[in-house]
Image (cartoon, rainbow over all chains, first blue to last red; front, side, top):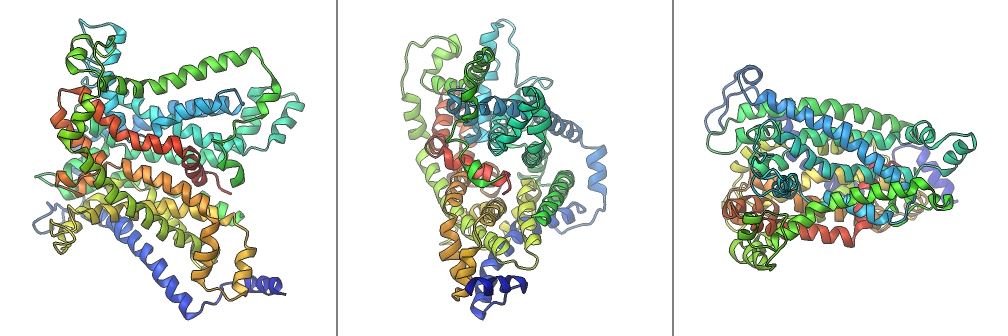
Length: 304
Length: 304
């Protein structure tokens, strides 16, 4: 009796709420929504608006149209290197660190002994802050006492791994990948555990070897994880900040967009309008990916 | 994919491989995984090693030399000279309310979105999820300006404004992290059986009872996982405090480490000790709560 009436209630569509329910909903949905708008979406919109002004944060706001963007693209030397570095970040994580994480996950998932140990050590860097990763990178890569130069034994003619603007971005990418690989590995391990083992058995019976089984059978079923990993890789690459800031405040070969934003808005000469324009470029690129991802999510939601 | 299988990644080393027995390729896999594990562990061990040695020794012989003296002096120094304790307290002032608030507010939104069949539920879910994926720098500028303009009474903030107060950092942490929590908890709640809720509705339970007494207790594993993860993220955060605080004494530990770098300057070994101290809490959390930690990440990624 109770179940059937509940089912009927479901079929009736939106449930009716008592006045007390409405108060609870109003307050407990209202606060988070307001906070989300006040902290996230409002400022995002405001950034877009400010990017068309020449505001310095104190005086009155002057509209300058697209002047900030023109300056940014044509007359701001660190901009294009920063874009290039962010793209290198994306390429390095996406083409090297991510596949490497997947490879590790596949190997560990095959059930070798000590897999728990492998998994924990490879994953451990993920819990460190990128700021600490940056400091540790200095221990290894510093010119005079760094371990890398000691291992290479080039004491007479040491390589300045973090100081050479042609070189340092690669070292930073390695440090960033140290953390990214473990993250990706854990996500894939979770995905692989959830793959129906009968699928693999069926493939084995059909005479598929390990490689064929993985690429034709297992990998396609990992699609949801692939999507998440892709989103994380893109977002992390665009957000890259802590590690370069910890190493040298994002100068001398380590320019990235997020550092340029920070440089322009904090400190004495704050160029808020200009900094916002850089932020909006960052926003536009990441929104492209976020929207693609959300569209997929909504589709999934409908199939549920 | 079901949640039960994904939650246990860390706990169960996969069994399917066991029945395959020993094959020649297996040794190679072990060698490879062992090498990778050690390579991933090495930087951390190096930091610990460096922190135990006097600077003169490493500056003369490099970090890769055998030690003559090992001591905890740098740890003592890091605590006494730079007031690490104070920064730890600052972190707790931010992270503890931050985690609790984010989880509380997000769990209700997740409940409303996934359990109440509200109109516009998906829109709400997207609003929060997408918000969490935006680059932080996009929201930094307007918040910086606004926080500077919001007055607070002296008993709430000695800077008399929202800027340079714990309130600002806590609020931003909560606002930003809610998105991830909503996403994860909504996914989790969707996997809960609806019958219990329906029975409760028939018995006349209001929205608050359905949320607080019926849904939340079932979410305990997801909440524990998220709390672990959120604590680590808030602890590791670098940017918010850097931008929204100007008084060095209020900084949380991760951001403070960057400030201390000026004092440590040439003494990389002292810096290493500082880094190890800062890394220790998250490493301990990870090692003790590994299952929860990983569950938190994978709950968000593999959709039920």
